Image 1: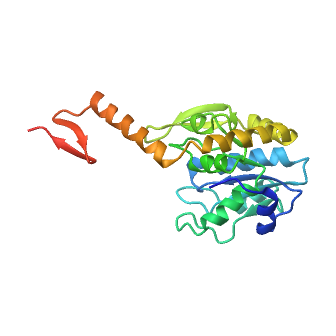
Image 2: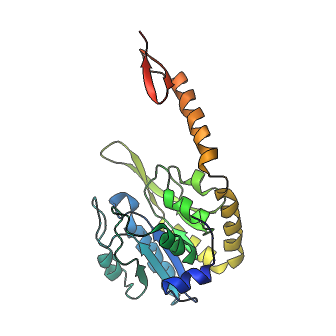
Image 3: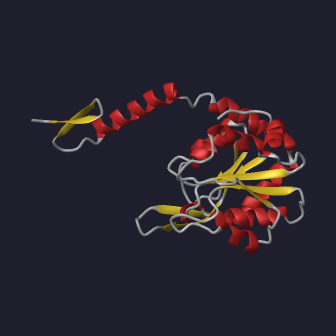
Length: 238
């Protein structure tokens, strides 16, 4: 993923140049909390006829996900939501080149996820220089860095599997959308900061760090009867 011309991306995708596009690109599962995304956008867009929500996801949810047409009707967003036709997350039917255009066409990237292990699409947005608004939970503050705004947590809760997840503050999400909408200068600052940051996130730089951290953890917390890792296999002590 890389930054390109927003005007060119919109021209190729058939999107109007005067739209203010809020993009959410994510799987449609319960944990991603698409309901919160639609609610926040609906409040933000009520006095902005040029605002559009680009929902790059499947229309029918997976793993207890959301039925997007129902959310559109619930929040009165007919003609305000864009979707990638024929997209199937599991089969990855959108070519990377097209996905890169979708990212570059956005003014802001919004996530209301309850938690992430990494947050790959936030990283993609940053690589494209798109300002990000995302929850202040899990790994997201580290991934987002100085590339956008963090949404306050309304409350945390424990899932049946013991994982602690979080619900974002919808009012604060709306406030941050309005903040970036009103300030092209701030969006430009986040664009430049994100592109510089993304240049550091390359495999030849990251993999040695992963290797170092994992090996240090093994030394510190090694399992009884096992010793150091070699060629990604456990070597048992005789």
